[in-house]
Amino acid sequence: MSNLNSLMGRLLRAACAALAMATLFGTAAAALAGQNCEPRRPSLESMRRDLALAVSVAEQLDEMARRDGTRVLLIARAGQDLSQYGLRYSHLGIAYRDDAVLGGRGAWRVVHKLNQCGSSRSTLYRQGLAEFFGDGLYAHEAGVVVLMPAIATRLVERLKDDKLLTTLHEPRYNMLAYPWSGPYQQSNQWAIETLAMLAEPAIISRAAARDWLRAHDYRPTTLQISSLTRLGARVSSAHISFDDHPFGRRMAGQIDTVTVDSVFAWMERAGLGGAPLRLRTLPADKPQRRAAIDTWALS
Image (cartoon, rainbow, N blue to C red; front, side):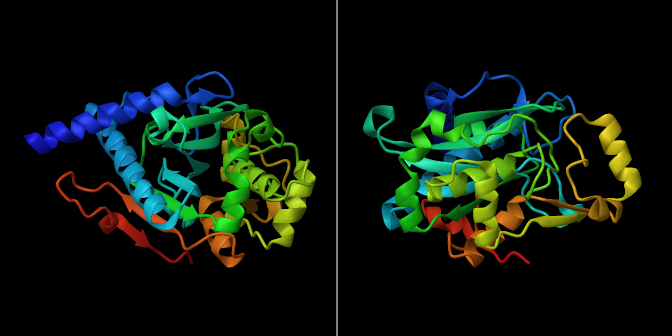
């Protein structure tokens, strides 16, 4: 019972801290990304598991910060089952540790892009881990790639600048936006275009960010999507479009887009980050926090 009370106390403190420190670039509407948009009421158990993951991830990241000096990383969640496409995670954000908040105790914050469920518009958010993992998860784990120290040092203060982070934001949202041109931008795409801008201050446009990503060998994921599936998605979903994709590839059912898995593979391949890590919720009675951190290879 004492372990349960301790866990619930930690969950409540983490949730309150996250809500207190969250600042939004836009309004806190029912913004969702990387998850199923079907109406549903989260159960108490699912909320408990979401919060438990957030607390455990925060503790493990704090340990990495103490041990390795980790300050900036890419962080991902699994909001829906994408296994039919060979993908593990659905949504990406940039996380950093702000040592000045919470009376100097410090906390992790995530900047990321969300679209209002089912709409073609998006907003940027700055949230705590409790909120980032509180949108309803398909799998209770986090994917993490730690940025190399030379890059992280350039990013950590710039990530606190709200105005700067809006520089490359395109509100027109398309979940399957083409990465190399077009009027739309999806959540993972904003994250890596903004990463390019933060890493290279000379970048002031999306076109320049795309050039940087090409030069650093970013390779999008090619999804095989049939014409019938494309037609159904376009008719029924305001947040899915295909008109920005090259005609020939679109007709062949080859849809190129930015996925978490492609970004994680690229970060290590380009020498911008370490190997991907998978963080899971640790039992409350297990003091060895590092036990839940796994590395895995992306094929």
